Image (cartoon, rainbow, N blue to C red; front, side):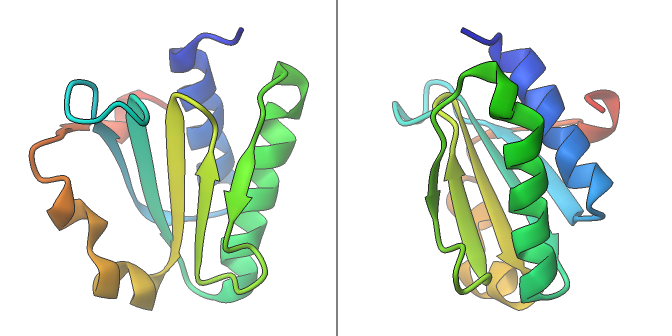
Length: 116
């Protein structure tokens, strides 16, 4: 089993590589039983949203992690369930509309710059 901190670092590397922006890592430990971390990021268009998801898959494929993926075809909001980490890749307009950041206001917002 891959250490969650290393997996989180790998996810952030992939997100950074594909130029996603407004990246947030929320520590939801104690707030939810579904995961320990949410990674939320934005992309400029549907193709970039898909490209970020592809890069994450490529980055973690050799780590023996089951990835559950939703929303890939539309490329507006892709949810990637990596077990302890759930990644939300949004088209910038949909991120503003759904505003997950507001829903998880009680979560600890981690410093992404120190994690890459």
